[in-house]
Image (cartoon, rainbow over all chains, first blue to last red; front, side, top):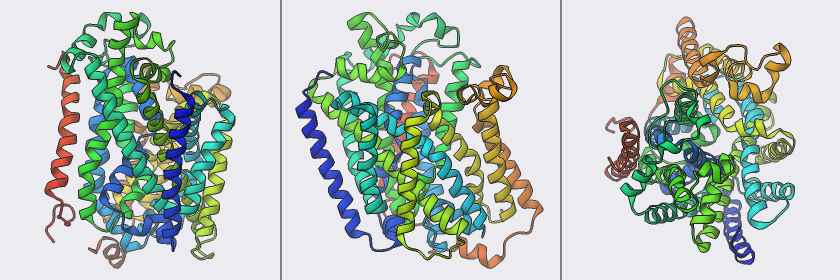
Length: 529
Length: 41
């Protein structure tokens, strides 16, 4: 890094002090379980929008997907459109308003509890809690690694120590301050990220001579696509990959649909809808939520792709070559060589904020899933009261699991962790969650069946068929001696396209075959408040 | 359009802007609207 370390150190320290201040405020304001779990159900719409966005967009969304755009081009912009339309508009207005109302009617404080109470099933709550407890630490582990890598290079701290420092700092304010601390620090981090990415966009376009000029230069570079990438469908940075090619399948099924739709059923995001007082707050939050996602994802991908023009102009190479073939290094290389020093410092803070905001909401969501949903409600059947301490112990435990995973898991699995978690959430939770809030006729049996089918179909597809995860996990290889048990295009189709429709179908068929819940219960769930 | 030849890409590019601006307009228009799913209270 070409920036002065003392200056960076001071900036990080100042930033940390503000974060801790918010954490302390959260601690002071936390009086009961509703405060700790749902920030008292009266969060400001702006805080909701920015904390939702900041939790959603991690360092890997900026660095990893920005780098993906650098390597494969602007086709990933469809994900931005999906993120804004599905991840913000549909999520807040259509899912959010019903989630908030039902959550308040049923006095649910977590996502698994909302579904569990809607279907009057401790099993659903406990099993959903268990799924989150087992798989979210994987996702958190990968974000932890991203954040620690940043601290390693930027602050010259040993990588293994960086993981610990980062985990301890975030754990401190999440455990003590609960969701109030999480959401206010997230919103603060969101503001930093918004400003950082805004400057990045303006500087990039101005450096490359303007919007149309920059795009035109990128379009003209199509002949520079390396042969090995052209062979798998890469046609240039301003064109879609060849239809049906491996690159096309990964882009469309895993990235655009998998991440674009999967976001609806993310427990750490869905729980935020229950933190606001009214539907009005959710509608107000759309105003800042849409532009926020655009500034994060949109800017990262546009800049990632345009880095090719910059590197070609300055070094005669495409970004992937400059980064030595490592997609994750494209964004850092570009920022370091193209941006002024003062901005590099600011951008490093932006990335740290992105990692910490995602981590804090993951820690809170998996801790509550473990302490509250799995242990208190699922195993102890609600017999141990409603103390916050059980949840705190749950958060501490799951954080430790994430740290251990970050140390011991092979990099191949960690790199796939986000996709695994998103796919699993979409298949296990989305059909059950949509049915819970939109379809009064959906029954407990239908929900249970769809939860189980979605979970196991998705895990099966990940372990034995979808090549990227199956190869990294190596279970299919160990059992059957082949990387994947199907071949050809099937190995490219993301689990979300198979397991989610299957779980929807099961939910509908089983619900129609079983007795509906009592009228009183349904009225209680859906009544206006 | 905008230096991008493939309509599948410039459509996505424009859609990103339109949807972000659409969110701003929606949020502003519905600033005091508390009804669920478009039903009037």
